[in-house]
Amino acid sequence: MKQPSRRITIISSCCLIASTSFLYKVQHILDSTQQLPQALTPVRNHNYSQVIHKRFNDKQLWDDLPSDAQLAARTLQWTRDSWDASKDSPLYHLPWNTLSKEQKNAAVVLGVDEDWSRGTVEELDQTAQFTPKEQSDRYSNPPPKPKLQNRTIPLIMRPKNGPPIFHLPTTQTLCKLNKFEVVCSNVTRTSSIEAYPLFAEYYTDGDGTHVPKQNTPQQRPIATDWFRPNATKFCGGGMYQPCANLGDELGPMLLLKLSGQEYIENRYDGMDVVIIGSVLNFIVKKYDLTVGRLGSHYNITVWGTGTKWGAKSVCFDFRAVRGPKTRDKYLQQGCNVPEVYGDPALLFPYIYTPKQLNLKKADLCLVPHMGDVAEDFPWWTELNGTSSLIQRFTYRDHETNGKIVRVIDIRTPDAAAFIDIMMTCKIIASASLHGMILAEAYNLTWSWIRLRDKSEDPFKYNDFFLSVGIDKTSARPLKVKAKDSVDKIIEHTMIPKIRGPSLFDPVKLLDACPFCDPDIVKGVKAVIGGK
Image (cartoon, rainbow, N blue to C red; front, top):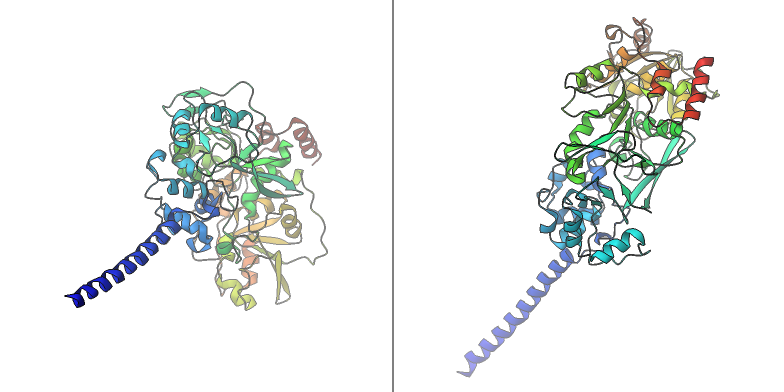
């Protein structure tokens, strides 16, 4: 009897040890999931504060995310495939107070806790476990280092009456000018702000009611948003390498130049104005997201912007649009759109005089679309014997049959440098819309070309052509193939365009500008009159 008893004892001990080891491993796995690393605490880490923003705007892929950001995404039930496909988290539509603590922490790290913050101030305070006194204190006299270890602070508050509130201690992105380049940095918001539109006369509340803004708008930086591309995908570098698309950078650049403000805020939710670009489609696409976050249809002011392939049933505070095709689309759905036309980039000759560079005049300059240089378009590969344009550059020269071909990179935030190089060209063939717009502004001979089999909808191009009086039939693109010669592109570029009266009036566009400083406008008008 003793022998079996010993075996049972030994087996029981082994099982106990194995069970203890197994439970320890299970607990370790649970702890590693539930006890998030420092980067996944509710304190907003500025390195990841706009991961979701980049995901939707820059198509940041799963493999580009830091490991702790991937952990946060997994906590919110994203997978690699669903993330790369820009699908919502399966938890996206759940009320904020039903999420677990770990899920809330992960959401804060990824910058999207406002997606779930849809309750009233009182409901959100209860979720965040703040007392009324704490709630009052953190508005009037917030501590320099709030104790947030066990709390989740919603980034956007929705009072029962009035507009949403952005408040401490959220991160904001402030941008300023460095000559003709917009530079941005993330800082902690130093004061709470009410999300009234600065320029529109009203916003539309959740029930569709037009709510007038306050008589005296709060003093704060003007808020706008623009696209900045994924550096890995579009510039051949790491995620944190400088990468920009000049056409998108021109909007905030002109906002700073013409408003005279030292800083603007880069913010999508509750932005005040949108300038330049074919972005109205994307704003509408993201409108449902911002409505969920803000609880209101924020009334964005539009100055010189266009749509890309049509419109959806959302009206904005229109002051000017890029061209008549954009205006017609919004008139058809009952919007009030004034007859003020022009891409504001056409104003550049009145605010910037190009420098003379010590470069030989190029017989032909090419301005590829940002997507062209992100891939190997066959014509340049055959001409130059290399596909080295994937990495960012300023310009590249190649001499063939006694002619200089100069390729200018549109992936730059520096408008002045781009224009300086552009002025060294005899003629310009551009696949980028803003390559054409700036060439037109500075009275250079230009043409539209396509460098890849993939082509964009011509809507935005024709919208611009009509705004400056060009018959679109005389500005059709040349699809450049590997066998096409430099002479063929030059011949295409030299074809005269059929022109009628231009709809663009620089003075009229400036008069419609809602944010322009009167003294700055007066100076620009003096230059216009002198030319």
